[in-house]
Image (cartoon, rainbow, N blue to C red; front, side):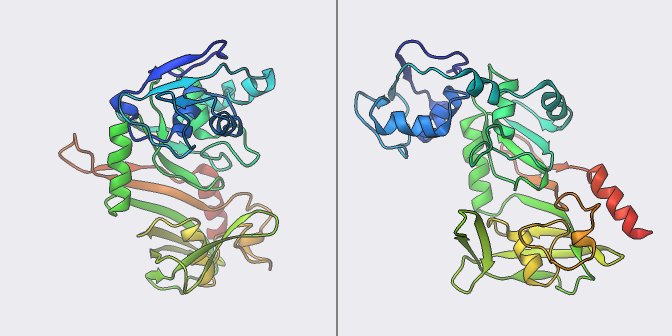
Length: 316
């Protein structure tokens, strides 16, 4: 099944193949109706305009091979269409950011400042941009997430089987993820931080995370790479996959990541230096087991130029 790239002017009936079995209906429609806001997709599902096997379904319904989906006519405004297509500049950046690709997997060096997906005021994220650049690709789904402010390795599955395989590997801790983190001060946090994390929401609606005895078990390994002026360059390896895990564990040990506006220090120093114009956290390396390779795939993403230059300044 190919994605729809033009507004639908009539009802379509789609039969689900094995490649999309197990996918949530809302995620499936987000791919099929590229550019249509998620809020509208939720609305047409809840109103019963989308039917599966002639019946109404919930937005959380998971597709089964052989299901027949009724998709109603959809029209988008010109602004909506423009907002979901990457410009020439972003397309060029992402083409040059491809770290690895085969028939089933794509790994991208996500730039800092680009969200992995649209939503919460962001119309175009990494996955929407990649889909817009590859309109004939039948399947492109994020395997995992990176914070918008974090740069580095992001996996995108090109088949349902690969998505399922990598999700299982992540759950079982079979994928190694290594990060560069530049933190405030001389690191005294030891080689590991084992502190439970709890997600909560501020009155403004912003999502935050804190160390809390009632939170989920979370562990990060740390290795000092280099001591710099008023800062330390670390290699961080999360053993669990909690939201903002490395950032909060660094803050908890009294060494927030430089440039971290959510979890950083207020006082002067590298964390608030005017040249510190990004979050200094970079997903540096992935070690992955793939079912069709007899060896572990190691994908390394070099430290970004701005990150390296800032570290060089601190060496002086």
